[in-house]
Length: 82
Image (cartoon, rainbow, N blue to C red; front, side, top):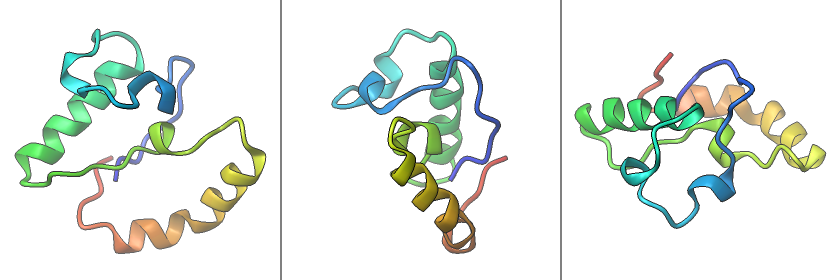
């Protein structure tokens, strides 16, 4: 789980869906995503979760549900990268 500050050049699901992260053009939020995935991979994990990529910010309902659940996600995270 990546804990970070949302920025203007954030990655959204359509940017990465069905794509290989390491093959994407390394600009804006993609650089942060690629670095995060490398750290997680180097730590022995095959899966990583980054809120900007996994939460549909166009859906107020999804954002609110995610905000309400994030504490539990952090508690159950095997690795949290800040």
